Length: 380
Ligand SMILES: [Ca+2]
Image: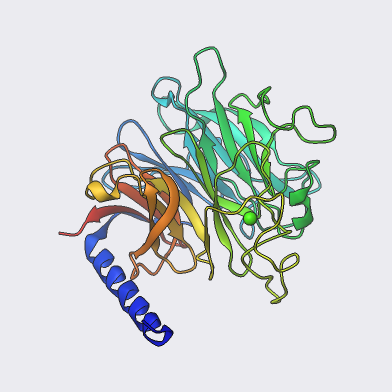
């Protein structure tokens, strides 16, 4: 086949793939009227715990009723991309009612801020957070309302004698991109800490002079998606500049290259680094999107609600194109992305969070002044 015919065939194949995907799934509205919801967790009674970026946490009942804001949420720096962001329940939440959340925290001067991570207990009457404790604060605080990162992933349960661990993604705050390559700060990093805030002794830089011991991997730009594969591997994605959004698998001590190398370009159309997409000593992404889809939220499908061929797929929300990306991997839960379908192309709202519930359904949050909680269901 000559080049002349290849492109129309590819376009046709992609169009057919899109059409087939559209018929596969649709959404049901669980709740609407949430203000810029950012993160979602599933409570044991079947209700939902949701964060709203301006600084509220609410419970949404199964029938869609939205509760009043929980008391006890700390003050957050709500401006630009900052505010109350991600949320995760402890693996033993049913017994201890502990949860983790991250947010933009103002500095004492009122001008600067950074991402912080707190733990809290949800009161028995589920009206308030108690025993709230900030266990990590990104250093340094800077003047910026951009690139907080802020996705939490709980590590697989450790042996009983060890402390449970979690990962937190941290953006480079946009104006401080060069910090992503330096280990003396938390900009553009993934960190790994115990759920009490202590540093695990086997973190990669605990013995490196001048390095902050929480750092797990570096050279990240603005990661707003994290999910733990069933085999215990951490997957994240991050926003590129103009193009070059990436999926990465952060291994201990790995350098993911920002801002030395990218598949994207700077917003003023200049090259990132020397303009090459690869560089010695930095990790290549598992997958990249050019043009950018602006990814947020990520979940592996483990349930069979959508058919056997969905099991082991990765779902990623798109803020920019307001769709849900379905990524088919070389093998379930692992390997390269071998095919990508765009679902919910007519959604028209930015997809901020993507989670699989204990009922096996996928749930989405749309980031909108009147944001919605949606359930993904097979098309009738
Ligand atoms: Ca990279």
